[in-house]
Amino acid sequence: MKNIYTLSHICIYPVKSLGGMALPAAKVEQRGLQHDRRWLLIDKDNRFLTQRENPRMALIQVALEKENLLFVHKNYPQEIFKLPFQLVENKEINVTIWEDTCKANPVSQEADEWFSEALGVDCRLVKMAEDEKRLVDQDYAFKGEIVSFADGYPFLIIGQSSLDDLNSRLEYPVEMRRFRPNFVFEGGLPYEEETWKRFSIGSVDFLGVKPCARCVLTTVNPEKGEIDSKEPLRTLASYRKSGNKILFGQNVLPVTLGEVKIGDSLIIKEITI
Image 1 (cartoon, rainbow, N blue to C red):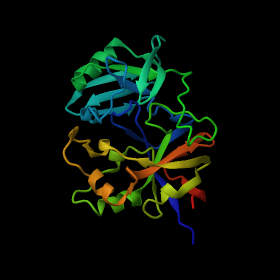
Image 2: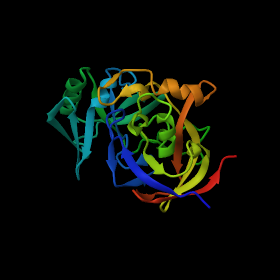
Image 3: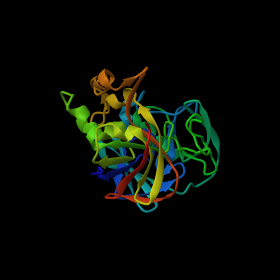
Image 4: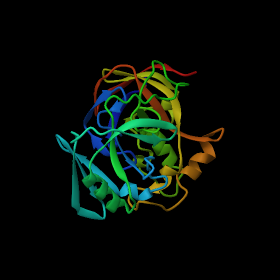
């Protein structure tokens, strides 16, 4: 009897390293889900900011309107910042994310001031230029795939059973949002998603390319915006280490485009032996 897999959660993170938002359905685009990590906060040197160095970024939450994103700081819920999708001007600068240099459009002085005050650090908000082609790691690419401001790949998928297994080993369970996946599914065995080479969600086909290496970002408590323990990374390191990397989840590339929705079936077409 074949295992049954069902898509149970879809999430996007419009501004890299800020809070995410769950959706009932989402469009699959070449560089990731629509609106996922298309915006980025940068420092005075135009280098990207993340929760690794600024865990308070976890306190800024986002919601989606028809033509806008709405941002609110958990500690100041009355102060909402509205960000239109459409840029006012198309000035272009170069920004650095890891080893990549990308073209981006500054959003506005108003946005810069709001996020700088909310985070207590001077920063600017930019949006990825429409014609930017940031390539995924060519060691794992198939057809020159591109990615947004995500760390390295357009999509990340994790099985609920994988988190359940991890939580069974922890003194204090953690939520899936610490791992920032785009897709969560029900069914199957813990960590088996890391063996998937070809699979579909609904009518959309995907390639699993490599397990995701995890970092200190998973230790940020999203409710507090701070690192309050070494977990869950310490426990993961005790049984999920490969070489010098700690693995949890599978990085994914799109084969076809379309729409996915909660309740879609996942069909496994090929696994890595």
